[in-house]
Image (cartoon, rainbow, N blue to C red; front, top):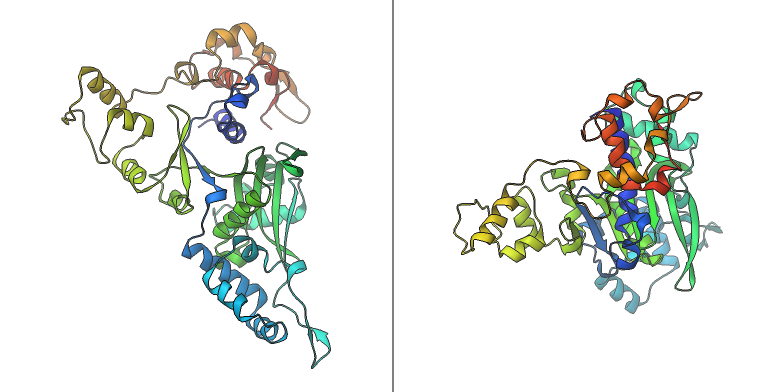
Length: 414
């Protein structure tokens, strides 16, 4: 993959998250500002109906026990005893909001121990703050540790500028008045600090209808506490508290074992790229994903396909038209790029050439050098119809963004 293709994919990912938040609203989805390609299967959780699994509850409880400490719990039970009704309710109910916030330093009870005349203290001080996605040296040190230990990168592969481009300075921050309350929008860092030290950071895009999880980094020292699960549960709680309704966990690739955990957050839905509809990721859906490389639940229902491996030779009682559809579905042709994909919202090649003056699109080659694309030496010789050529990739990006955004963007290759 070229640098240009990687840049395009990274930008498309962030823009995809924004447009996905509009798919539940056909009025906003039809607006021309949402011209963007969505070329991967995305997973969405309905936070209003979310119920933590036993594993999720155990993860939260284990972290809370670690933060508070057994000594604190024993003293707090003596100094702030619960009623029988309260104990019974806690044994039989799990409240996500209470469990998530229980160990945050400002919320931890500090009753006075009569023996020493001083407030009892938890084993650790735990703080969580939603901050603007600005660069700080503290955040970079955490990123550096994560890249070294998780991705096994060397010192020459990690840089401050790379961190800034990857995880900082996203969409900016703003607010709107929604259902009578202020709702944050934009790109944020959710920072987790233990005893004053930054130990984890979630990168979030807060969109009009959802909290979108972009990335998570954590320090090697807290590896055993499953911060991937802890951060996801806290982000789900953030969505519930902020009235965002949905929680997006990014891509879902069924063949990637590391992504299977996303199906454990229920009810989870996958985006059907044929009709842009959301379908419940249940046992039937998972069986179909295991049987086929590509699954469109809308076409599966239309063709009445069973959830097992199929070939075009199977006798499913289909007529000639149905068999033709089945053949195309089971044996899709090679991709032809954005212009040949018939993707809703993507400009055609003729529209790009007639409406977008992307030859004059500015490209930053270094801190001191910015030129127009037509000024690049081989620009005129590259084929716009070749999706693997720089000109083809940039033309597809222009088709996704539309003329208004193209005039405001600068391609940055520094």
